Image (tube, rainbow, N blue to C red; front, side):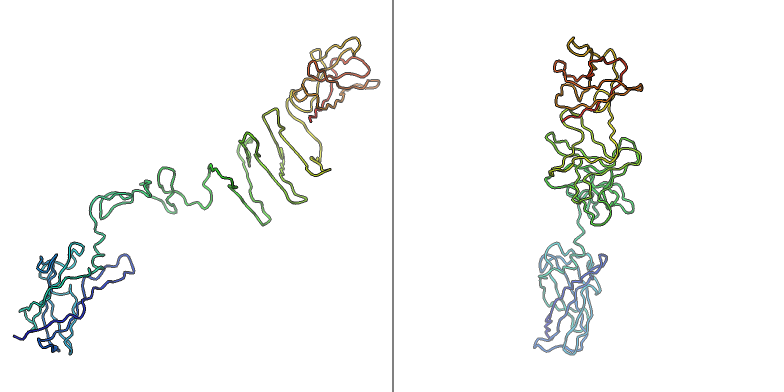
Length: 394
């Protein structure tokens, strides 16, 4: 019998780049060789039969796959076949476990195209057909761990960065948000989710809004309870701070401006006896701290308001010694009591003719810490007389 040499030109492992996740790697390996006789002469235009056996772990290991194919050589003895397209006698090509152990390829040839095969040798496949291995690499089995739950090959996502994911199914338009406990479906709001609260320790401004157009930067509107503010500012620093602070760099601008069609435009309030509810200062020499357009209205209880009426009665009239006036009207007001530095403006209110009435003045009684109203004519103050009082502290 004539000895034949089957000289493999290349053993090609096709790696197909997938364009979609659904694409599968081709279940075949391209094999190309040249058939020559013992003297090296090619066998042109000849039908030959090939048997491929894929052995596991060693050159004489268990055959995990075997097939036969018929090929016709070219005029230079070249032939091409695809292993995986032949007549299968053992195993399945798709069932080859490329990840488990080394693989050895045995090639046998019958140059007459029959079934009398000549062993052409066995060679280890030094490179795993990666596309074929990748096609089964995802077939992991066992219990999932970490942020995955269930079992492979179909685990479920149970968490992100060890934070659990809610099992609630999302609705259209929702996104996954962290609610402080877990990742849960929530609305994808482009702005703030209301109500919104947050606490940050920072030396920088937390919210800065600049409008270079003609509109406002921040607008607060409330239509609910009458005691609720549209914009509310509070400073909890015991050493100072501003609840609301405004500044204007324009000659005709206002640092803080308020308007109301029926209520109060701007109001200030404090709950201590040291600081004023409102403070207005002009640091420019000769400038005005307050400019009023319209009248002044002072409100509050009679005990603490800066402007009030007082009516003479037996309870608030005191007798004065023989060298003083016969009596005086005591002013009992929190803004004036024990306060020698304040100024009091007093006017008499009476529906009767004031002809011949004496002028009134006020004096401070250091013994009682209270101011008194008296008449300059040393005349008595009669019960029922009414006086308007304005207290200015400085």
